[in-house]
Amino acid sequence: MKRFIFLSIALLIAVVASAQSINETKPLRLGPDGYVHYDHEIRLTVGASPIDHLEYGWAIWEPNSELIHPDDFLYNGAYKNSCGYALSYMYSPRKWLSFGLYVGYTGWWQSQFTNSTSQLHSTNFEHHIMFVPTVRFSYLNRRNVRLYSSVGIGYGLCLERTKDSNGALTQSYKSAFVPVQFTPIGVSVGRRLYGFAELTVGSMANLSAGIGFRF
Amino acid sequence: MKRLIYIFAALFALTSCTIYEADEPNPDRYARKAYKLMNEQITFQLHVLSYAQVINQYAQADETERYAIEDKHLPRLRLRQTDDGWRVMDGDDTALYVIFDTPLDEVGSIWKIKQGDGAVSNKYWEIECKGQNLWQIRYASDFYSHSVSLLLDVETGELTEGRLCDTPIYEYTTTGEGCIDQNVEVASPYRTEMDIVEPVRSDRYIYTSYYGDQVARYSFMEGLLSFKVTNTKADGSDASTFLCKITGPQQQKFIHNPK
Image 1: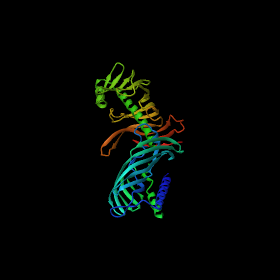
Image 2: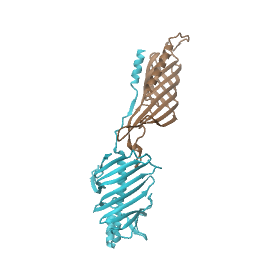
Image 3: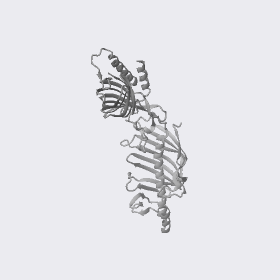
Image 4: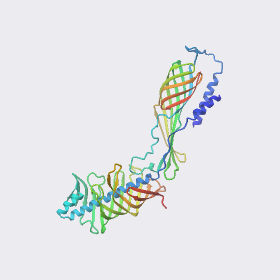
């Protein structure tokens, strides 16, 4: 799943980047500093430690009961997160202002094993897909370096699934949620093709980085 | 293009974070619960037997002896004789109802006992004298989340220094069997069956607490119990069995799937 997403986004960026080599008839806009201002940009973001589910995973707690419970026969495997991935498009009518949308994904999974034999019992998966309109404010715009902040709030879809040891689906559950992403500070380096890093907090990531392309 | 690939590869290295490491297997978890459930039920019956023995002494004592029994064993409780038996009173509440015709230590004597006001279960159970210092407890009761049945043969030993209001006050040696059925309406569908393989000796013991105080407790001291835990909604093929070896006060060793 992860490789599929990665490959799709990589190919998409490659296509968009190569399209710019065709004769451009639209006049380039110059900013106040004399350098070219690009109205559009796309980004690929990879982020770590989304804020959701930073608690305790799926609760095979020791159940809060003195009576015997099915979870007493199981123990938790490692609780893992895929990290967050997002593809975004932003439009900049002004050098200091951009707005657009990012489409993001993050996933969690955790297996349960039997206490007596350590064999796989079941695996829980949770997939989050988010559509987040975002506004970005750039407060430092140099030729190659920009500092900015951004905020976004949107719509998310959560799909929870549980599969048994044979891979058969035993439980499936869908729900909606409100993803929020707030970036107090981000920095991008580069002109058309650039890299960026952000200190951020939200449903997609708490620390993110990526590459983008302006056109 | 090459630079682009390197950048992607570097970003990709950030992926798939482990938020929490895996837990360690804990095969004793369900066993400890099963043992605790059964331990509590057996200890409760031994405590009630202690009450019955004190009531028996009190019923046969003269006035002077009764004062001594009250001072020693019942400083906070009162015994009241009614038309059909005796009550153990804790303030205005009745802790136990006891019905009997013959002394508890007379062979063949059967005492009926019921928990007092406020108890979930409202059924009498029986204690029968089988010999000198030997009683059989036949107990069956339904609670909101589970039902319990016990058939225990208990031999009384020495009187301990314990207080009747807190714990059993005699050293006991117990054999027998028991069963706890969890109510499928409100709990997971498990049945715990227990058989005492080697007699369980219970007694009062003293230990030093974390703060340096000498603390008294009542506990199983030695014995061997066999357990079988079954999911009553499954076909029984996944029943879990274990032995519980009591190695000391509050200490047990669990042996899973014994042959």
